[in-house]
Image (tube, rainbow, N blue to C red):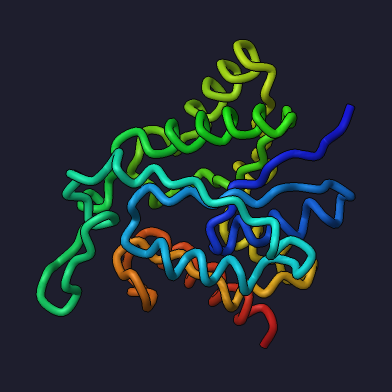
Length: 210
């Protein structure tokens, strides 16, 4: 049975590493970028075009679902003025985001004739969303497989950001050019959950190299 499928790609460290990991495993994929209204969508997409393997930059499929969250007050949708507005992890919450993304990915995969969806979600210690837990991923994977024959693959979900970064470096992925900020649409803020995870991982790798 073919392992080829689609990859949920955002231009971030995890999905970029997964793209290189898949190719190293001999698995072909269609990169799928989902625009759900995140304020950093343009920056993410431009980053994705830069960090994907060259063989796949012209294969990117963009799915636009931003109207779903057009009334959201999440600071991941409505960018804050980081000079004057304090932002907490709770301010970045987006209801059912991962449920939405995974079901859309599974649906799109079937339309292309694939039964595999690859996602680089990890069980982050800083994530606040209920649908970021291992328990959620287990249940979601079971539902999609049972009712649609689509398999959700999350090879990094039990890894730390540090472990994923190490894999990326070993595969030659340009992780330094990735973008993962939740609070700023253009320049990494360094304080949101995504930035904290990413910076901690890179600092640990730098410390080991000294």
